[in-house]
Length: 478
Ligand code: ADP
Ligand code: MG
Picture 1 (tube, rainbow, N blue to C red):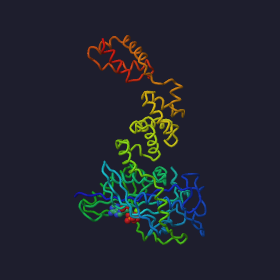
Picture 2 (cartoon, helix red, strand yellow):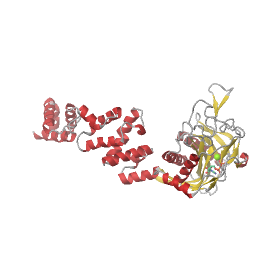
Picture 3 (tube, rainbow, N blue to C red):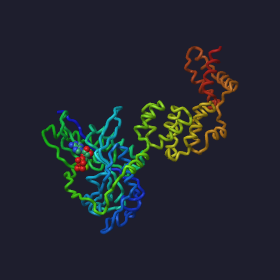
């Protein structure tokens, strides 16, 4: 029997507000355990939470960017469960009236556009962390610093049809949140993670099969591996006439297998009820419009525009739009130097390379877009050759000086003086009679050798086009 894979993701992203969701204690990663806490974070009896408005703004931004409808009336609910790292004994979340619902995003898989619908985006608080120390199985510590950090949960419809597609969707969501600047989506720090639900059904069937859920994944590679493992495992069960058990499973990274962790809980297990300590949120048109106006151009739209407007190949555009900062940087260079292709090559190639070596990012690049554009213009007007420009750019990154300054200080100006170039050519021809012989007997490939020798004499400064032309003329002459 042939099976169709059905996947739906529940993506969690921590929002990068300054304070926590219901208190002003700093929302920052890490720190000495149990220092970013207060009576609200600890859920002391009698304290009252106060909603962080910025967290609502960020959630609305995510919703609008993902084509969601916004609930004009939204509220929080208590979701009860016991975890050592959830001191209140319940999590403040949203059940019946999430802030955003009924959206979709489009993304590309192997050059094809796919669409995944989004069921809802709701706002809730994160829990703390249990710490199991290495080599000690007699104790578990708990760190409440993460407790109360604002978290959005983006629940997809079961529209994804392969592990690969699920990963592409997950990446697309990450990129959107990064562009919106509402979450740092740091997967290692756990601020961007997902639960993946997966089932199989006979191809052509309309009904969904029984699913399993893979909890708290925070690596693209592991989710892909875990999903692929589940596809095989479930297919075997179904082929042998068995039934998949609906349960939560964990991925064992070392062995590359998933393992049953616990039976699936139902909504009723959580005994949800409306959070009595918070008023419902009413969202008016003006609030929505304010957020809508603040949305940046989104990654996919930017890619399509870059291809169209700058005539760049898709592969380049994917690199250049990897982050909003990089895309803005590229665009400023392209517009200032007037050559989008050259701008793309310098930004993607040498600039990123030199920055990486210097341990810097595009945001704190010592070479601003205007400075790079100036360097490209110096190539265009023949002041320096492309080869020398590489050296100049390296110096620019190292010192923060402008291209003009470096070229003047180091005397790197390109030499286009015919008499000077001819003198170097004559010297090279005189010193290499054997190669001259080869060239004249028809092995014209040695021209490259001559060019190299002349460039060496000029210490890279001779105009390479001129060297080429003059060399040919001299060698062909006699
Ligand atoms: P819960 O909140 O209990 O985890 P939901 O019904 O809200 O359950 O669904 C959670 C996620 O599971 C959603 O992303 C949804 O798309 C996905 N999902 C639901 N049914 C299936 C299924 N049969 N196969 C794969 N994914 C599914
Ligand atoms: Mg779930």
